[in-house]
Length: 412
Image 1 (cartoon, one colour):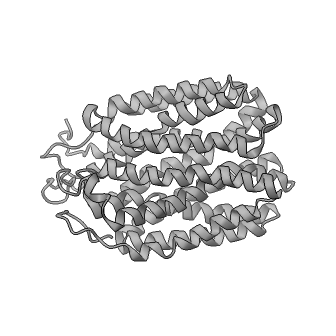
Image 2 (spheres, rainbow, N blue to C red):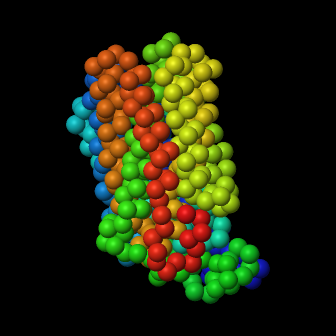
């Protein structure tokens, strides 16, 4: 039953389950930067070589997200997300046995990436269950990502100090597997036609939007808004992944202690939660395009600060601004795709845009590591990120709605 006798809306159970899954997927994801130094110290790998595993992961992730969205439409989210949880657990378990770079690339770049691919499915489910409060509900589930990125890096740092990096990956594997598979059991793809909404009104009034309206992926690929969104997503992930992989070792290279450097990632995660919720409510009032522009402005300022930051307080200031920007941008893309293209192919359209963006996610850490290896400084690499963020101030102004029959297009 979607609704109990008191009129409780099952969509809120969906949001809670997705929150836990997002927290787990992205919390474990942000631990890679903490393990980064262990790989370099134990195996003598270059930063570009080690970063390459992150790049492969992001390319595989982008591709598999499209497949996962298709499989969810056919088999439902419970089966697909459970399978992703199993793969994530296996991938991190194998990471505890890494001895060569090719193992790192296969285990982390391949298997872990496949386990993370439930991401697009999560966003699509929430978009299907909510229309009027879509921005806020998306912000809540993304808060799981922020909380995960806030608490997981310090925990991983403590694990490594206490148990060593190999045993730490075993613990992460067990936690990741258990939480994702458990959360998946509460998922349902979309509400029934008469499901009551969060306001107690029928679907016809304020409830979940029909999944039958909107553009197909093939038609969306021929529109300018798709490529503009994909480019904005590209800039976003290029910068986010560059920072996620390299800011910890950049900070320790400045003489900052490893514990304080891990706190930088925690601050980013904490302020990310704030940014997500602010952006979700703001987008529902002033629109996705304006909210996205504000977020790119904050990211530009934060990256300029990072280039000059040499003390803990200035790095923490960067982390706070960057976290707000990160959260703001992260929460916008799914509602923006739903508003512009409708819901009939929401998952695969968002997945296709995420695949284009995954190229940026793949290039970012590798190019940043290569620049450091060549120039012995991260500043030029951070400048590249700042330029991309500045370009992100322009592209949202070019977005225009695709004129298809959709229930809600006012927020674009």
